[in-house]
Length: 393
Image 1: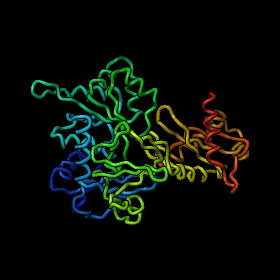
Image 2 (image 1 turned 120 degrees about the vertical axis):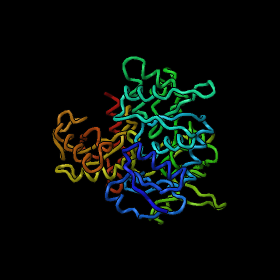
Image 3 (image 1 turned 60 degrees about the vertical axis):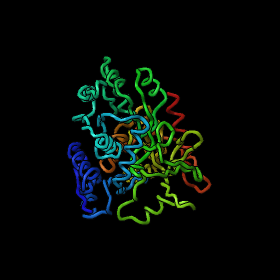
Image 4 (image 1 turned 120 degrees about the horizontal axis):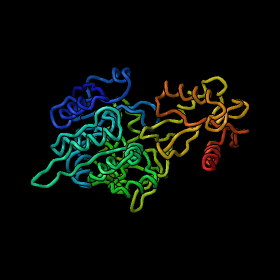
């Protein structure tokens, strides 16, 4: 089956590509990744492929996820079964799986999606939402959209009432990409917004657990503390990487195929995700490998023994902080107040090599690193120290 590269920033181009890839005879489309990564993709892909989404993923290193037409369609239909069917507004980047699925849901419902033009803002959102009004049989067609928490906060913070009214008019607003802070969820509820928390990834064709409850056909199990998912929305694997695919997608004794999410959690009546098995955070809906951030920081003069730890962030869900001993960076204070040049240098280097979402929030110095018996820095203790310092301000 032929594969066609589509500009992941052009929503109209992605929509056209999906129309053929999911509803028509193809070709499959490739989204995301750098130009070099896109050029390395083969011209042909497995039969039945709808989309190849290249993402940094939970490891922080590029991977090309193979999603079949069947998986994408199953996800869209399961969403409709759970929250209803209607018109969709795309307010997310179209090259990521959450944006892709907004467009697929619109195509499956037989309705053209509304598309937010330009950069996200409250005014742009209100304008796009206002264009969606339509009726069917004398009844208003329900409208839906999908956002990340930072976008929800932007709309709730907007002056006046227009943005909040626009939000409340949606039959449901899917929120994914990162944990939703309880305070933000409470503000949304107070504004009359029906928020539906979603959990999933590119490997599951987007969100497949809504408000802790799996969608129809989706299975959840916890193995050695790790969340694993099954069902018709699973990806075929990683293009050209059979070993990586075999590690991430496993079969049980009954032959059921499971995706190992890398998340830790519990599952009783509802799924509760508690963290990551690996050293990765989700900041503003983007996976950021702290290992890769640390490599970049340690390459800077005077910061060769820096340690990067995660902290909670009220806007982005999670962020990172660079911790260095006083002897390595004398004069650098908490949040970089006494060493803005160091923090600026760190953020610029990380942004250049890993992208803006990976930039650390602060550079913090400590008298010395707590150590494990192995002599390595105790990262968990450093994270607690940093979290305590932040909570005291």
